[in-house]
Length: 199
Image 1 (spheres, one colour):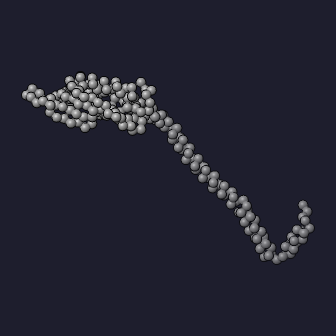
Image 2 (image 1 turned 90 degrees about the horizontal axis):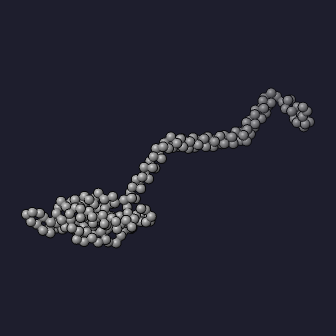
Image 3 (image 1 turned 180 degrees about the vertical axis):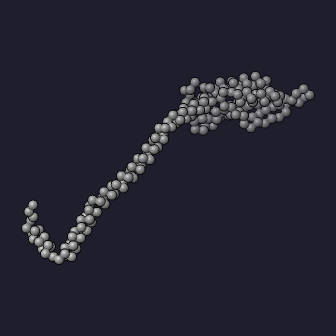
């Protein structure tokens, strides 16, 4: 291969230089080539390699998470099903507006079954709390201690939630045979506000 005459002339001049000068020029060329390689090739490739390693670690972390979820998918699905059943059960305990009247009849029937006389039974204004509303009911009833306790027990056994709040108990009649008590209090039930579509 023939070189350009100008390049050939410079090479001939370098060949005539002493060995130390030729070694210095060769060293400088090696350094220039190394620096050029470092700046143009290795540095960029190294940065790209570092980025790719970081991406690899991130992908491995995501893969571990996905494998963990995949390994436990049956447990997650079972937990979701369990939570949905609990939600349905709780929502069933919150009557909708139509069912409140049925619940009030159930409370009245519980009073008859327990042998207490319900003197007054009045529903107060509802208190809305997001998806449910409190429905307070003022009750006044009379009966002996055991019958009143049975009434409260029957209330607790209703399929819908009914809480007995503050209760004021006074003696209505006291004799050797029995003591009749007057009970005034507030029973609170709850209703579902999200719509009246449930049965």
